[in-house]
Image 1 (cartoon, one colour):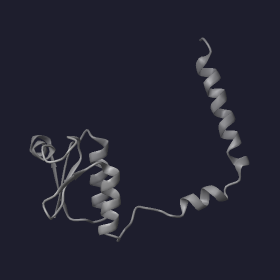
Image 2 (spheres, one colour):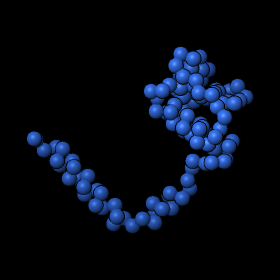
Image 3 (cartoon, one colour):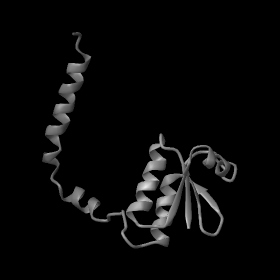
Image 4 (tube, helix red, strand yellow):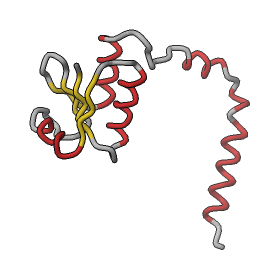
Length: 112
């Protein structure tokens, strides 16, 4: 079983927790003072730290997500369809958004 060491105030810890819950991967959520011991077992002492069932410790959310995808292919969170959709979208649909952002910048820069 995986052990996720993190903190309630850490968006990366909560993202990993949500990922494990969504993917239905058995894990234990360890937070607060109980999670500090795991920081000594990784190179960069940042949370979240995941202890794998084999006893190894890993951190850094993005590599963890990719590794869990490889180990547990069910209920994937990766979508290979979005780059195709972005390429199929005509560029003319993006122009109004750019113009409105320009207007927001002018409004924000003007004295009140």
